[in-house]
Image 1: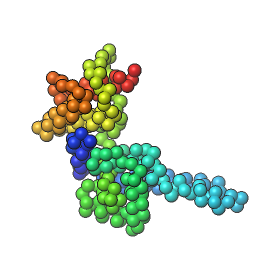
Image 2: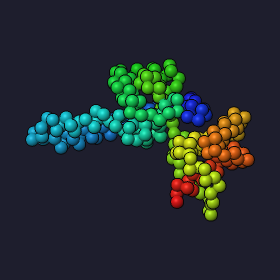
Image 3: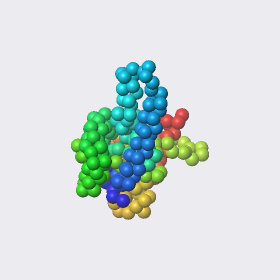
Image 4: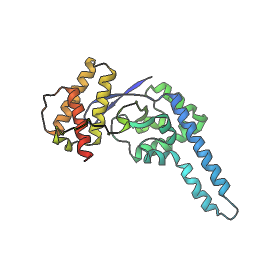
Length: 235
């Protein structure tokens, strides 16, 4: 599986696995099944008494399905959610309405023309999991790694845990997600030299934002920050 380097706002490059064409096809098939069921329901509910305008209004959620889902579900449709893949920006920023709108507009070319053949060809040639819409929106679709930050910021605290760094109040959810991603990368890379370098860079970036200097090693520091953040937000 190919990986792509996502640059975070702290200038830390995080390696993320690109969603395969197979995963994206299955996700699209699930979405099509959901749309088919929805259309079947509204067709059964429709009657000669219903106005044409009302029927068109009922069709709008199906027409804008991908755009609505990705906006409401943080880069995922129901198919993507089931397949554990999601849309992200390559530059590490948070995708917004413009990103999702561009992807939705180009979907008419990428997916509907030649039944997805255009999208598949571009993804294969590009090598970063990007169809035309992704290239224009500077986005891609990644696989959500098990146990990664994509599962959220929540972390179970050890029994009788006490706060170490009150300054974690200066951090936000994004900082904690990055810390978790770096820790996962260090674990998966068996603390290779590149992993240690990434951990050190993440530690310094977070220390700077918190306005402190710690004598803890990178791994211990990042774990402590994650625990502290969960501690102050669970009280």
